[in-house]
Amino acid sequence: MTSTPFRNPRQHKRAAVSIDVTVNGVLNVVEGRITDLSEGGARIEGGAILPVRSRCEIHYAGQTVYATVMWAEIDRMGVRFPYELVDGPLYKALERARDAWPTEPAQIFRTMRPASFGRRGLN
Image (cartoon, rainbow, N blue to C red; front, top):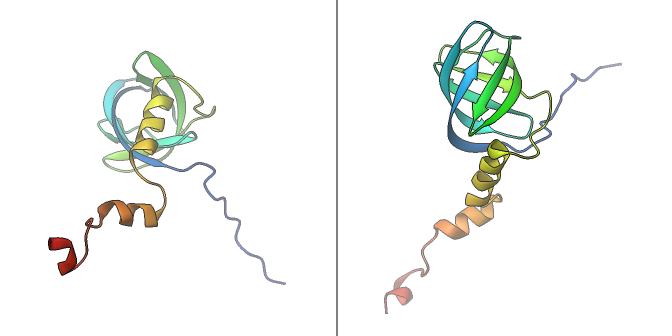
């Protein structure tokens, strides 16, 4: 009998964003930038690198979102929100980012191709 490794697919679609935030750790307050966001978590780049498993607060436009650091590298970290984003300024920024880009690859191709094709379009 073979076992397959447990795989936890992402529940939420991520969106590329550029949102400046303040991150409160236990001992420090640092500035960072969210570059990847979903209802369940975010990637934060810049000076806001905290130890794995530490808890923090993310402050943006008057909203405070609690998070746990899941992974950390030299210049970025991934955080998970214990409560999904469902409203507030950060959620609205996520919605705006998703509305800004088509979601299907075919839609992206259609928006990038020229209106005309070949010599017939030059008339």
